[in-house]
Amino acid sequence: MDAIKVGLIGLGTVGAGTVTVLERNANEIARRAGREIKVVQAAVKDITKPRDCALDELELVEDPFLVVNNPEVDVVVELIGGETLAKELILQAIANGKQVVTANKALIALHGNDIFAAAQEQGVMVAFEAAVAGGISIIKAIREGMAGNRIEWLAGIINGTSNYILTELEQTGVDFAGVLKDAQDLGYAEADPTFDIEGIDAAHKLTILASIAYGVPLQFEAVFTEGITKVTHQDVLYAQELGYRVKHLGIARRTDAGLELRVHPTLIPRSRLIANVNGVMNAVVVRGDAVGSTLHYGAGAGAEPTASAVVADVVDVVRAMTADPNNRVPHLAFQPGALANLPAVAMDEVQTAFYLRLELADKTGVMAQVTDILAAANININALLQKADATQSEQSDTATAIILTEPTREGDFNAALAQIQASGSLVGEAVTFRVESLA
Ligand code: HSE
Image 1 (cartoon, helix red, strand yellow):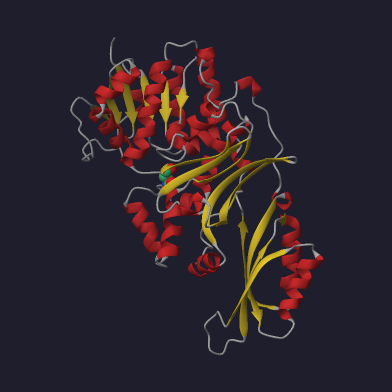
Image 2 (image 1 turned 30 degrees about the vertical axis):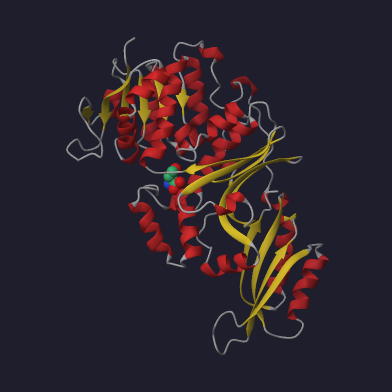
């Protein structure tokens, strides 16, 4: 059989990793795919720039449309990221009847519904395993491995850069900017790092996971998104004292009220396996009604881990090319006609526990005032720490209180917090984080 010819769009970190893995493991990959797979062409911005991979039989071009319109190319692998050009290129590739593999989470989260409809119409596949959690086969695990389950909830560390920064913050207390720079130098961070630290990248990935877990159309706009920029070394240490770690989680949960979709820093018990996932590693816990809780762990970014998922997708589409397009694994796990919206649960209605750090006036009765407000709102306190003069100012007449609540309706907690803020007990900031037991 003729070799399958791959055209790459983008030859940066992941593109070079893909060429390297395809070449190094060519024999094993061919034995798995049933065909030899060769990268024949790659579109790059600057043809003269040195690349981190062998370019032997690879033609470099600067116009990416040459790749998607190349009649020789069977599979187009899009690795440039971004929305506009990437979408145009992928739609053109689909129109030309090519199979597509992409690692572009923003594109899938924001435009996946249109792209999959076009692919379905044309009878081609668009594979996107590398878009979520790098080398972890989480898409395949949920879409295929858990096809018999009703998914109850999933929670994941799905942004390696944020996890790297939070880990360094806990272990070394080093400054945010320095750790971010390291993550960028290591090739983990997005071109625009606000996508990582403000939670947007994680929200893109959660959008995709939720869609394949619950059979809902991709709905990025329904995700509540909060990044890691307000997490301090001090809060991480208080959390530790209470037996928790702070992790940036993407959470999707089906409740009677609908679907919760939220990305935010979260305190989780240190005893959970996922609480011990450090550095750039990613992990996703998926709870199905039949299988129970499953944990999927691995490198969430980097050249070869991401290439591992890209190459697996190429093998998948090569294997499925001759299958009846109507009997392939559906892009979003559920048959296209069976996707159905679930109502999005407003954050005020979410049931979650809270970590609350208060800078209080160091006066008799102040703590009672706070606990009275919480009691009146029916918010049960689970743990309480009080630190004198935690602001470390010698003249300071303040005390820091750290309160962990039991799960409560978020709207009720916010109303109680507003009362605490209006009570005059507070002399400094009130910092809150959500707490999940992941039980
Ligand atoms: N910027 C992403 C991360 C890369 O840090 O996880 C992989 O999607």
